[in-house]
Structure formats: structure tokens, C-alpha cells
Amino acid sequence: MTSWGSGMPSDSQGREAGKAFSFTEEQISFIKDNRYNMSYNKLSISFNSTFNTNLNEITIKYYIYKYNICKKYNQITTEQREFIKLLIEENKEIDYIRELFNKKYDKKYNLKNFKRICSRSKLIDIKRKIYPVGSIVQIGDNDNYLYEKTNTKKWVKKQCIEWEKYNEKLDKNHTIIFKDGNVYNFNINNLLLIPMSEFHMIRCNHLLHKWRDEEELELVLSLARLKLKIAERSRDRRGCPRPRP
Image (cartoon, rainbow, N blue to C red):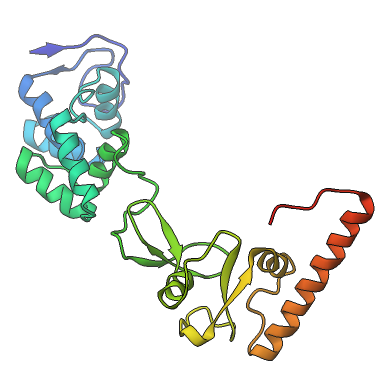
């Protein structure tokens, strides 16, 4: 039997204030097996029901953290880490990886805690959802562009991918916009190649995709080119170096 000393919180715990609660090995194993599969409230209810005790969730949480009951329980071995890493590189869904992991190593991790384990092992970024290669999502920016995942770490604008199917590969100094202002119309005839300098000028003036046809687009482009020319001459008068293309 494992016994720990005083210093514990004393409220309605079904024991005298200041008296240490003694955990058996069976009770410690129970906490280890269920700590990462249920909340502290559910854990305390289940613990009390199983062992006929009256510990509240604050007390359970106190013992877990103070005496590190689960300190090493949530770690994975090198073999387990390589197993997860291999499946992630194969673009498997994280929930599918969790199921295989639990079955192979006889674990009971739920999705939330399995992601936390992978994050601590630096296998995934827990703040980001894992998408397989080929996924198309709308990333949270002001352009409302769709991005396609081309490999495990790279996202590319959908319109750029469609453009490159019929044209040469884009360089970093150019980008693609939509002639009709509809960011979901990927018809090749609706895509227009422009320099990044013009794109940034349009964007800085809050005119991106404010046009509805090619005539309005031409007015926006003319305005952007005029402002770029004015900025260029202003730099020349001040003797400032020209920006990189």
C-alpha cells in the first residue's frame, strides 16, 4: 500500500482533516488507466464508485499532480514514436493513426489526448488540424482564397495550380487573380497573371476583387500602375534605391 503525508486539501472528502489518504496499487493503476480518457469529475465519480470512497475531483487532481502518478504514463517509446511518424508521413488521418496505435500497443487514448501526446513528441502541431495531401481549404485571410496542400508542409493557392496546368510555372514575382472577381471561378479563361507589385498595390488600397468584370478590372490595374509609377518617381527624386523586383 502506498501512503502519502499531510498537506492535502481538506473539504468534504469523507475523511478527517489533515489525515493522509492511502492509495493501493490497484487504485493507482485505475487512475493511470483512466486519467487520459475522462475528465477529473468523471474520474472521481468512477473512482468512488469502484472503490467505495468519497474523494472529490479537486482531491483526485491534487494527488495526480503532487505525486506525479501519471508522470511517465503519458510518454511514448522510440518504437511507438517511429510508428506514428511513419503513418503521418503517409498522410493518414490522425484518428485512424490513433485507432491503429491503440490496437497495436493495447492503449485507450481518445483523440484529444492522442493529439497531445503527438504534440509533446513533436510529431504534429496540436494547434493545427492535419490535412492529407490534396486537401483544399479556405485559409483565414482577407482574400478568401482556396489553398491546396501539395505536400506534407506546403500549401499553394488553387488558382496558381490551375494556371500552371496550362502555362509555365509561376515565379515568386507574379501571381494570379480572377478577371470577374469571383475567387471560386477557376476557369482558365478567368485567370490573369499580374506582377506581385501590382497585386500588393491593389491589396493595400482595399480594391482586391472589388471588380465584377474585365472593364472594371482594367480600371483597378491602371490605378495600381499609376500609383506604382508615382512611387517610383518619388523615390528617384529623393535618391532612394529601387526596390527589388
